[in-house]
Length: 142
Image (cartoon, rainbow, N blue to C red):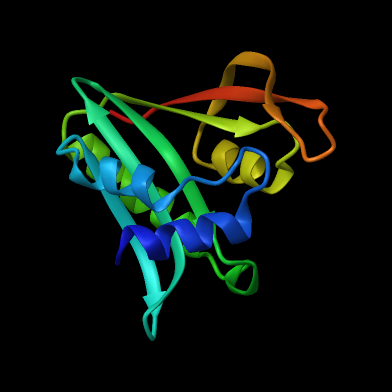
């Protein structure tokens, strides 16, 4: 799985927040505190999650699923495995940011015990120029 594959899927999925470049993914993949979990089929990335663990805290940096691969439990599987791996690496809690408009992701995160601990007003910019809040979520995992 290459940074280019990841950036391609990220572009398909995200406009707000803006998608990451292959260079940004390469930087994270090179970082030993980060790890990637994914589902792929015939060289196509269907879903992936990028996590980082520092000390006793984990962060879900991004989670993406191809539009045609949704509603198959791929993101749920990646998130569950990622939280288990983060806990195995010593994390006791996990944080993430999610667009306040991403109802499906919010429901997924809440089903894993994530809850809102903060809100960043107008953190993202929508394609029409208006600000979109980022919700900061936390879950106890260890």
